[in-house]
Amino acid sequence: MKRKTISKTIKEIVSHLMEKVMDRVLITDPFVVEEHRASKPLYAALVPDEIFKGSHFERRFVTPFGGVWEKLASAVAEVYHGHCYKGYTIHGLIGRERLRRIQEILNRLEHPDPVTKKRPHPNFAEEMHYVCEGGGEPVPCDVTCDIFVENKRKGKRYAFELKAPLPNSDQTKVSKEKIMKLMAMEPMVVDGAYYALVYNPYGPNKSDYAWTFPSRWFDMQNDSSVLIGEEFWDMIGGSGAYKDFIVEINKIGGEYKDRIYREFLGIEPPQHNKSGALR
Image (cartoon, rainbow, N blue to C red; front, top):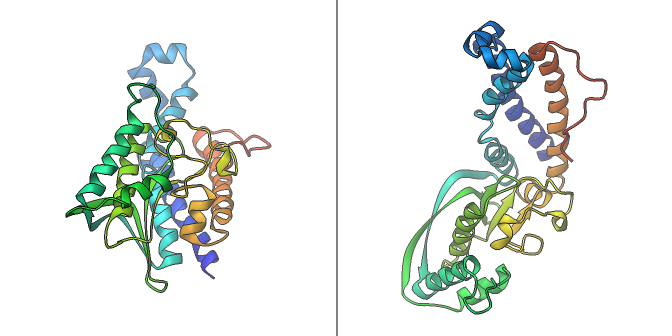
């Protein structure tokens, strides 16, 4: 029953956003060839109108879809776990020495050793073992995570730093610091804190992931604190949630691509219009 509800939820969220986009590009803010030619005569003389019509659509598509991953993830987690909050602040206590060790680890990962000119390879389990051996006077700390999930029936609480498939290094450093602080709190406030990528553009397995920037901070293929694609969706939505997610997105995508070809571009869709499908 929950899987059907999750599939329905995904469809409703994405369809609602797409309908807003379609209404804008077709009704409230359409591409008007005459205006384009009058405002950019040189461009119109050199480049086909259809190119600018496409960019007109793109600009009106990107804004409403800016937070779509968090909307989808929180809705799926709400169905499966019962409670999910976006931008949730977690309060806890961390020993002064633990805080110092977290900064030490981050600094070592960021700056090469002055003698060897090398950085250590990240290993979250070993790093957290080192951090938690520290103590010191408890210091109040607040950490705001992207997604906070609570399953009251199981008595479990999880925090997620949720990122698009190709995050930059600075974003990842901030996320790692948050995750380490959450896992260093005493008493424990969460049962797990994770760096989660919503999709793996390189293949179905974690070992396929090849984007280098976050690898300065996490062992992207082996750290248990890293969830990529299927691992993440199945954790927040139960076994099979990722497959349901893929099916629904591709189904909706096929429908809207046809509409965009016909209603916005004014041409018939290609015979085999399956390029760009999620896998």
